[in-house]
Image (cartoon, rainbow, N blue to C red; front, side, top):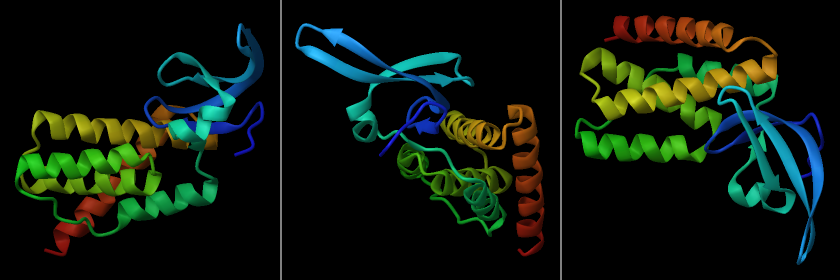
Length: 169
């Protein structure tokens, strides 16, 4: 993956950010290039060896087309999650760990639906919150808006989708 200053990326654990510089650091064993990444939603500055970016799971941020696809995923009919909380949480956590915005959107949609028909556990609620925050932060970064605006878009999309799903039952 070719990376440059100004590229918008997503770190699998810290969320979306921007490469602010690429620095060469000198060590006893030689020198190495590091990407300096600002993660505004977390208030973090990361220094990651450039050759390890893909290995760590850093990916380019969604395009505007992918944002539309992600919102369309939120609008789709939700899938029922397992009633067994351990099984459900394992499934949800695996989807969140992929870092894929479509899978995260599916998780957010399905957990939101599960919350309407049953009660979420504390861990389910944490996973739902994490998924929403990841999607909103990436949407805000890509569309160059505030996270609060991205949250409003996500909430409006989910509300309409849940109302439509409720009327279909």
